[in-house]
Amino acid sequence: MYFFTSPPYVVILLVAMASATNALRLPIEAVPLGHLARRAAPTNSSIPVATFQNLQYFVNITVGGQVYTTAIDTGSADMWIYANVSNTTTTTGSASLSYAIGNVEGNIVQAPLSFAGYNVPSQAFIEVQNVTGFTTNPRNEGYTALVGLGPPESSTVYSAFNTTVGLPMMNNIFRQNLTNENYITLLLPRAFDPDSNSTGVMTVSELVPGFEAVANQTKLPVSMLTAQEFTQQQQHWTTLTDANGVIGPNGQAINVMTNVTSAAGTGKLVAVFDSGYSLPQVPKAISDALYSGLPGAQLINVTGAGEIWEVPCTQEVNVTFVFGGQKIFVHPLDVTLPANASVATNSSSICYGAFQPIGANAASPYYDMILGMGFLRNAHILLDYGTFSMNTSTDQNDPFIQLLAITNATEAHNDFVNVRINNNGTVPMSKPSTTSAATPSFSPNPVYWSSVLVGLAVTILCL
Image (cartoon, rainbow, N blue to C red):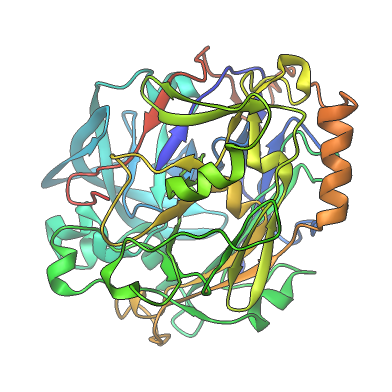
């Protein structure tokens, strides 16, 4: 997990959850609001959740009777809440999650949890008492909790008990119906895009209407760590690209070699899908191929963030990734990001290359790149837990990943021209908060692009 922070100019509204069904669908709301014709509208019970300037995504989770704004992170497996949670039961465990620039620590407690109608009588999580070393306090970023959606074997809390007492949230939800298939899907919205929707969708054991084709795509096997490797690296949602699977702006495959021994000689790269990573981390050869040839481009070093390309905002850059024979085109609005994140147009003239050269804190001998939010906004993703469900259901197939390309290159080009060239992407500095008790508001304090919350090395869950 890696959160790239920026100036808060929005108020994010979160609506409380409604009635239960056997399958869960959560709309994920972008702020500022967009027009979204190409995305499916949520049905059944739903909850608006937020994207903070395309840099973080949230859902509401009720724990101990209190609703918490919670970041969703497929790159980790633990849940923590930075608050004094009501109705908790103490345990004998405690945990410290270490990050590249700080850490959180606290006692492991249990409390009743509700997630859009699914009720877990006793969910274990870390009740954080101490946060140290971060550039900004998570509370100042507008969220007080994080839930990991990654493979549960990597959970620090689960490791503390090694019994069902410490199961992550998704495993406890899967236990609600043992005959359901154990998968989630994510359809993330894009802020600042005139052709995108204000609402994305998260589902549990259910396909999103209009996007059922994801189930027909190639089942990409998860690259499993060996027992020896697991002692040095946490298990992720990891798979292989196709051979020559990264296509650059010139329409040709980018020449890059894998860093992973098991993939050597295949022409393929090992990729992690991580919804908690704002800026995708890629081999420097890929980043250089995308940005180095742009007029005025320069590679700079941002304190706390590492190397990043500084490029003109009006220069469109195209990149395509290939998985299972399917080409996934990345929207050019996701390939570069304005240096002033509160303005989506070229008014600042300076943008950053969103596909960042992978830094030392993120690099690993077990994967080549981390495809975070900038990639996932272009691919509807299905994550099937299979044996990751740890015998909590009858679905015990090998875990796999399916991707559905959702970005149309022609429409994306028109969006880019409209936003970056025609200056139609500026958004107001704030939106009024809603005072309804059912609609908690979200209003973080100012932080800036150079402030980077790096969620990389979690004590046992280190990348």
